[in-house]
Image 1 (tube, one colour):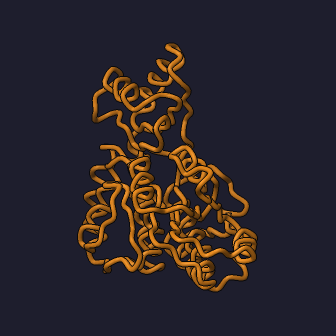
Image 2 (cartoon, rainbow, N blue to C red; image 1 turned 135 degrees about the vertical axis):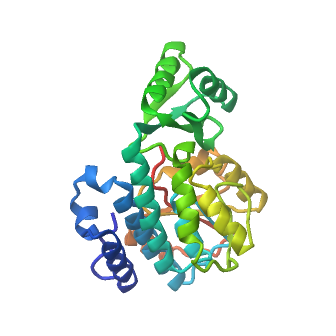
Image 3 (cartoon, one colour; image 1 turned 30 degrees about the vertical axis):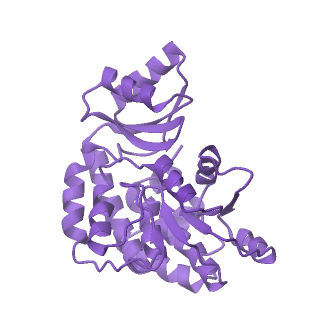
Length: 310
């Protein structure tokens, strides 16, 4: 992750050095060599991903590619805040490091996790949650697509859900490789602490439209954006609704920036198909190829990467 930026890109190197100082770890080595069980810890993973996303983003902007609207999935929202001009790139890395620290603290205090469930509708998923658990112990964390969701809560309850899905042949399920129950009531105290900590940071009006996870709508007022960026810790990610908002805005070209290609796949299942272009930017070669085939689209949107998704 980010290997092609870490040695020759001054913008990325500056952000990476800041991230390393914040978490007291050589993130360059961790991203390139692992071990994965250490990199997956939120306090390391989150500032690393934001650094890499913004490194590629900066290359795009410097080559004249400017979107009409940005959004990010979960952690990716922090990168999008920087991309839209709401916060600086340095603030984004700093916020990601603190967010990761608080989330790791939660993970150490509970036996929680996340479970992706596929090939069933929202009504079926909601019914399973009600059947299986107390609503404070098991919740819908991501509404990603019409038949793709992520649940968050106690591991034993997630295991029960997985068993019910298999037994009743309702669809498929898969554990998400994260260390805690993100976007759930388990993070309530972390959200309170985060809200106090982030309050002194300057949030500016967005220079580019930004769609937020907690509302699936564009937001313009800095104080509202700051509040919703905190609320996101315990709120579901309304990604399916966010994709609908993009459709309503007339977006037809999407860039996914950062590690992986999962958001590109989700765009396809959320009706961005033959009439749309969905491009993945997770290495400099992707940017170079794009620049060789530059068509100015009528409407462009950028999806920043996520810290997890399945």
